[in-house]
Structures are given as structure tokens and as C-alpha cells.
Length: 442
Length: 172
Image 1 (cartoon, rainbow over the protein chains, first blue to last red):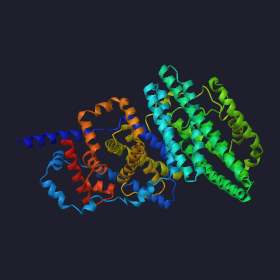
Image 2 (tube, one colour):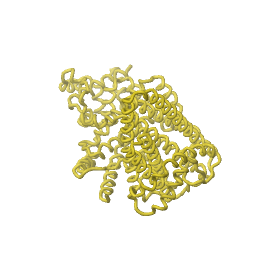
Image 3 (cartoon, each protein chain N blue to C red):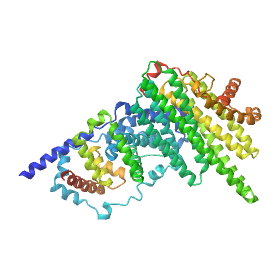
Image 4 (cartoon, chains in turn cyan, yellow):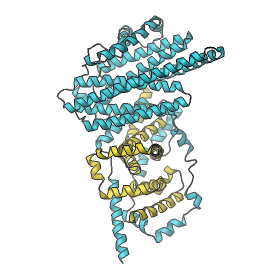
């Protein structure tokens, strides 16, 4: 008798536990953020299919309504559930009737589903792309909070930790890519990380100057995150320098043998070629991305993104010319520049949309005192490269298929190239109307 | 081009509907699998993103919901692996996360809930997975079978054995 009471007690306890568990949901905020992230992701990865393939997609999506029906699964009556869990009698034999040989019970999951597996077998480059997007999302989340004035010390350190973990994940992936011998893939990711970080430094400076009447904590937090980004950028470029140094040494070692030299050249050509296609495809996709969100993009963000994109376009053309002239090393570097410029455009557009405010991309020369020194250093480097490449500019003009406002673009482009890395001060316009759209999703 | 845009928008809208009606469930599933709101949220988002990418690349998915769960399942395995890669950092992370629980999270971690989480934690992953799908996600055996790519029989047996083990754990 006692046993039965105990059993019933247990049953009730378990019932309550599962019931409680079913109440676990995302907060509205979490769900909305997830939704926005998903929208951003879908915009970056649009459906690009042939007609027949599009059919597949529709077929996959159309049953959604059915799915919702089948999957608003009727909860098994709870008492029955509990009874099933705890009854050692009838339930047992019923289930046992269906038992398969033991080995089938613990199947080695070899072929879960080959198709799915291959879909999920993202290679390291794909993984790095996603990790890059996630790292950027972390920053955008911080920026959203900053706009609302809700960035406190606790949240900031939390965001910092999450951001750090994304970055170290990225570093691991890069290391893996290198181990696989895919140095170009690792380096294109590196370029984009740096560009993304630099753009967010600019964006945070934007916010800093725009947000008024905010708590000290909020302001301090922005400064903290900005400093963090700056450190990362610096660490990254230092690491890059060391690596490049290493490569030079290797080259010297192998200079004696002619065979090695042709091999090196071959390698350089391949590296440049692969980077060329990456730069081109990123440029194309970012341009498409921009076109798609055009209506939601505000004036200044739009203009500055445009400048970054035209710069990238010119750089790509320039890199191609170098490539044709068999200056592979230089082509390689130029494609890197193009990638960086594209990434900046991308980050600017995505963040502007994400935050629902107008942002400056750091292209004009409003003075920002605290950043001046660093800016100068970088500017010098930037200028040197410009001088080297200026000769090519004119001949490449014909390749531009962008209509209209070429002159204006050119002016901007000059600015862009000389000022690309100069920190920008007060200028993002906090548009309260659009700010309200931050959390409404689409 | 214009038509493509339109098509794209339509697809996005449909997919968002799918997200709206399933995000909570996928999140809940992940939460009870890895007992961290933050990671569960991350995994949930990534699962939807990857599913979209798979679709956008022109592949057909017969059962969208099952697919998302499968992606989540694989991502969860990655998470476990990450955790076991350096258990020290896992501990640090857990130690770090503990004090930063949000208010709702604290409420949710009431006695019963944490008993369930603890008990689930003691189960083998395989058992945990089916128990969560069956009794927390309220899925039918057929749906679970779809997700695990197993026959309904195998799944039934697995559920049966898992709940036997869970019962033992809770009793002790």
C-alpha cells in the first residue's frame, strides 16, 4: 500500500516537472533578436537558383502549413504519459513486443542521413564565415543596447566574454584552415575580421557621439568595448606581420633553387586567383545585399557603403590588371584590400539596418581627437599603397558597369582610399523614428 | 532579377513563419540538452540559419521541422565535443555563467526544474534526447523516428528504456 502511495507521489512530481519544463520559452526579446539575426542571415544568403531548383525550395516550404498541423502534436494525456513511464506492468510487455534485436537498439549511427550529413558537413571555411557573422552579431547586440542606454557593466563583461569566445573560435578555424594548407582561405577570413572590427570601432564612435543623456555606465561600456575591439585589431595585425616576416624568410631560403622559384610563382598565382574569385563573389553578394535592403537604408549609410563598394570594385579591377601582368603578389594584396573594403560596406549596411539608425562609415574627416594618432599611422600606409596603384585607376574605369554618378564616386573613392582607416567622430544621426523599428523585425 | 527578388521575399516570409512557430520548441529542446540558456539560444539560431542555407542552395527538404532538429542535434554534439575538449574551460564558463542568470532564469531553475535538469544530465545523451523529445517537446514517436532516422519500433524501445533509467535516477 505504501508503495502505491509513493508511486503516485512520484508520478505527480514527475508530471509537474515535465509540465514546468514545457513552459520554458524564449523571452520576447530573445525571440526577436533571433528573428532579426535570421533575417540578416537570409538576406546575406538569398535564394539563388535555377528554376527547377526553386521548385525544390517551394516544395520544401509549402508543406509548412501542413507541418504546423502535424506538429502541433497533441500532447499525450499527461496521466497516460506518467502511467507509461512508471507502470512496470502492461506498458513493459507492450513495448517489449516491439523490441528489436539488441544491436538494433543501440545502432551505430553510420548513415543518419547522408544528405543531411553532407549539408551539415560545412567545411572550415564555411564555419569560419558563420563564426564571423556571429562575432559581428555580438557587437551589434552590444550596439543595440548602447542605443537604448542599457549597456551596463555586467552585460558588457558578458558580451565581451562571448565575443572573445567567438574570436578564439575563429582563430581555431583559421589555424585548421592553415593546417589543411588553405592559407588563402585563412587569410581572406583574417582580412574580413579585421575590416569588420575596424568598422565597428567606427560605428561605436558614431554611437558615442550620438547618444545623449545617457548613463555614465552606458558610456563607459561603449568605451570598453571599443577598446577591446582596438586590441583585437592590433593583435591581429601584429600576428599578420609576424607571419609575413616568416614567409619572407622562407623565400630567401629557397631562392637558390630555380625550381622552387617557379613553384613559388605558381603558388602565388594560385593564391591570387583564388582570392580574386573570393573578392569578386563577396563584392557581388554585398552589392546584391545592398540593393535588397536599399529601401531601409538611410542616406548616410547608403552613401558611405556605396563609396566602400566602388572602392572595392576599382580595387578588384586593379588587382586583375596586376594579375594579368603576372604581378601575383601585388594582385594578391590588392584583392585583400578589395575584400576589406567590401567587408566594411557589408558591416556598415548590416549594422545600420540592424540598429535602425543612420551611420557614417568613417569616410570624411571630422576630427576625432582620441583616435588621431593611430589614424595617422594607418593613413600613411594607406597612402603609400594608393600611390603605387593610382596609375591603374584610369584604365580600369571602362570596366565599371555601374551607371551614373561616376564622377561623384570617383571623388568619394579618393577620399575613401586615403581616409579609410581614419577614425570618425560625431556624425551618426540617431533617428528616433527608425530606432523604434529596432525590435519590430520585418 | 525583380522576379527573383520577389521570390526571395516570399521564401523568407515563409521561412520566418516557420521560425515563429518553432523557435521556442527548438530552443526548449536545446536548453534541456545542454542546460545553458545562452548556448541553447545560439544553437537554435544557428540551426535555423543552416537550414535556410541548405534550402537557399536549392536542396529539397521533406520534413522541415525534422531537419531543423537534426541540424540542432549535430550542433549539440559539437557543443559537447567543445566542452570535453577542455573541461577546464568548460568549468570556467559554467562558473562564469552561474552568477549572471537572469531573473527569469532563476525563477525557472526552481527546485523541480533543477531536479529534472540534474536527472537528465545523468542520463546518456541517447536517452536524454528521446526523453526530451517525447515528454518535453511532446513529439509523436513517428516524428522522433523521422528526426533520428530510425524506425518507430527502435524509437519506442529506446524511449521505454530511457524512461526506465530516468525513473531509477529520480528515485535515488
